[in-house]
Structures are given as C-alpha cells and as structure tokens.
Amino acid sequence: MNETPTVLITVTGKDRPGVTAAVFDTLSRFAVSVLDMEQIVLRERLILGILITAPRDVAKLADAVESTAADLEMDVEVARGEGDNERRREGRALVTVLGRPLPPAAVSAVTGRIADTGANIDRIVRMARHPVTAIEFQISGADFDRLRTMLAQEAVRQRVDVAVQRAGLVRHGRRLLVLDVDSTLVQGEAIDMLAEHAGVGPEVAAITERAMRGELDFETSVRERVRLLAGLDAAALDAVYTAMELSPGARTLVRTLKRLGYRLAIVSGGFSQLTDRWVRDLDIDCSRANELEIVEGRLTGRIVGRVVDRAGKAQALRQFAAESKISLDRTIAVGDGANDLDMLAVAGLGIAFNAKALVRDAAHTALNVPYLDAILYLLGITREEIEAADAAAPGAS
Image (tube, rainbow, N blue to C red; front, side):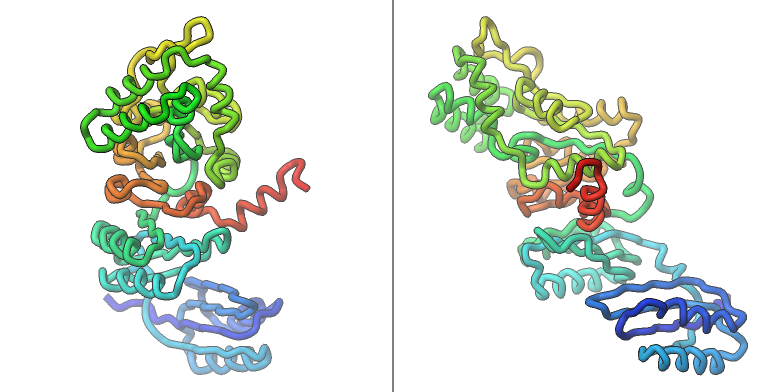
C-alpha cells in the first residue's frame, strides 16, 4: 500500500520569540495538513521539526520556507518522503539514565546498547539536572526483555543507574507506592539502634550476620533479636524515633506524589511503634509492621501476632492495592533487602534502592543514588515540575 507523500521541515538557529509563528504563517499559504511537530531549545539554540502532507508544488513551498528562514536568520532543511510515525508505535519503552555526574561514555554505551537491540530513540528529555542528572529516552521498536537485560548489564559497567519501563497509560494517573522503611524511607536500622540502647549491639549484629549468611530465616532472626531487647524501657523507642533520619529526598517524594493523588504505604520488618509515627508525620495512607509487646512500660522481648516477613510484605502490597482499588500493574514497590524481594516482584514496578547485589539483580530497576526522590524521574516527573509545585504551594516564600 502506498503511503501518503509528506514533507519534513527542520529549522535550526538562535531562538527568539515568533519563530514558530512565522514558519506556520508561511505554511498556511499552502493546502497542507500538520501531521507532527517537535521543538526543543538547548542553551537558546532552537531545533524545530514539522511534518506536513506534501503540497502539489513542493518546490514552491520549499522556496517560501527558505525565504522565511533567511529573514529569521535561521537554517532550514526541507526533505520529501512518505508516511508518518505510525511504525514507531510498536515496541515502545522508556529508558531513564541517572548519573552523578553523567559522563558522555555512559551515554554512548547506553545508546549503543539500545541500537544493538534494533530499537530506535524517538525522543530525549531531561528529567533533572541536580542533584543528579536524569535523562529519559523514549524508545520504539524494542524487544523489551532483551533491552532491559542488556541495559542492566551496561549500567553496572558504566556505574550509572538505568531504568527500563514499558510505555503506556500505566505511567499516568493514580498509583500506589509502597516503601520499605529501614534503609529505604529512613537511614539505618531501627533494631540496631534499639540494641545499642539495650547494650546488646554486638549480640544483635551477630544474629543479623547469621541471617545474611542464610543460617536463619527472617522470622527466626527477628524473634531472636527482639528477645535480646527484653526489659528495655519503652522510652527508648522515643529516643530512636527522634534520632532516625529520613533518606534524602523522602519528604519531596511523598509531598509530590500526594499532590498527584497517589496512595502511599509503608511496610516494614521493623516495629509499628516507630512506623505509626512516620505515618502521622508524613501523612502516609496505610502501613504494616511488627508490633513489639510492651508491658508496664518495658519491652517483653516478644512480638505480638505474626511476623511481617518477605511473604508478608508482598501480601500487604496486594491488600493495600485491593483496598485502594488500584490494579497491581499500577503499583510501585521500593526496598533494599532480601526481605523485599517478593514485594518487588509482585509490584508493577519494583525498585531496588541502594540495595544489595541480590536485590538489584532481581528488581525491575535499581537506584544507587542516595536521593529517594529520584524515583519521581522514573515516574515521568521532572525536577522543574517539582520545584514549580513547591514554589506555588501555600506558604512558600
């Protein structure tokens, strides 16, 4: 089937008000239809591309456009061809590259691997320039699984973060974000801090090490570590909460997603006496964590009810999604440890945040920058949009 003849007009030069209007004023003299257009400005340098149906007299149109460009002191190219961008609707994906800094060699390697898979880069957008550089590549013609595998390997070699997601409606609208707490939402591990207050830091660390070597399952390790806290004054929980620090960017992440109508949840193998306070402080919608038994103001060394383990975190995500009437493909889970693996697998997008190698390899994508709000760039939200929303908020100075 013959495709419709088309003309691609590319205008480049120093940006100034009225360039686009002048070019389209010229095109309005011809019997053509606008099919597509793109315009970007980089350091006051304009690149404008316009795809139109071909007129009867392409040469006359080209002369008119070239005359307009000369008046504007711009360069122009007029190229004949056929068809639109329909073929680029297949195999669409989003590749986000983050670096601190982002070296040209890394961009070369990532874009080279994209080409190796036979995919094409249709559009490039900067998502952030500080405190990390984040660039999004919109891809067509991708073999998604192959693309994700190749770019995950390249990310390790180049020491940058690369996230690969399917393009589509799932990225837009209301979603559910579920965050692990210790070493994800907050820095450090609550049980280690409680152990220091109880004077059993080395003993708790030894049990943690045994669990990491696979000698103990998570539930057993948690119960054994909590048992060592027996007799600790419950006031230590207040001291630990006061001492805990949110990960950089955590408040920005929460504040921005709440503005967009997201549901936010936290799940933790830690303790509800601490997570409940983060729920109140950050306006989190739902949470699940282990409850320490407290009698007469002291920890008994026992946990009330079932332990929130690896399977329990995944179950919590499913429940939160069902209660929020949000499908699983619209959920995002973020965690750093092996205890988060099931939750990361169940979610539509599982993000390993400064995680161990085992978790990075299993997750959909990994972030190794220390800023939790870098997650926003993976969701299509730019740093400029975040800062503009903060500046427009009531009470902003």
